Image 1 (cartoon, rainbow, N blue to C red):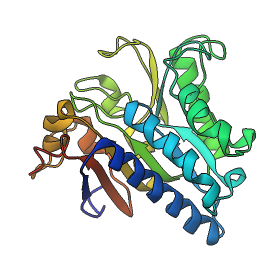
Image 2: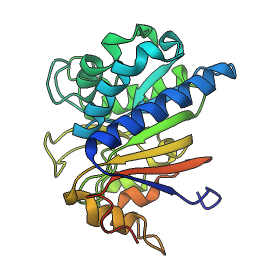
Image 3: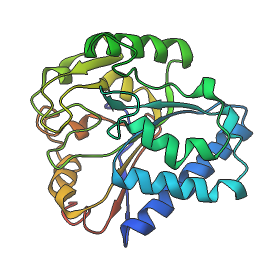
Length: 247
């Protein structure tokens, strides 16, 4: 991680502008990658601003050159709930984006739900196996949100999962943010990415964003978002409210 380039910060006037900008950036990245012969491997995130961005991508998709049948989709984390639960990040991504753009169902790699695994740890093991078998060992892009407490994916401050370095995914119980059971990629898995994009909106995230971008960087046990970096680029896409405490 020490060799990763310094993060770049883009500040947009509103959450609408933010969602539109990230949507356009995603379409450009996918187009360039596919033009070079790559099948992009993208880890999606959840949350309100991600939902808005996904809807904007779907709106713009018809005028882009992206071949959606040649993109692999993963998730950085997921809530361990029933597959039809509104808490599922994948359910929202499907309804807002994936169901509208002609993806190949075999290239959509969801994290197991309660219908697919006996418990959250079994779900994490199965997802790690899926990432290993379906991917090429790294992500083209990992997209992430940040919580007001600085958590990223479902890696929460002070939790033991922050120190796991021998697994692709881990189970999380007693999450401080409901629902309590989740599956998350680990730091090593998240950091095997060409690019990492943080997409953050709202004044309640400002302190966490400011601390994550501070110099020297904070302890990842306190601000986990500071522990994820792309090997080629790390971009923080912010609106003015979330950027208000950036150093």
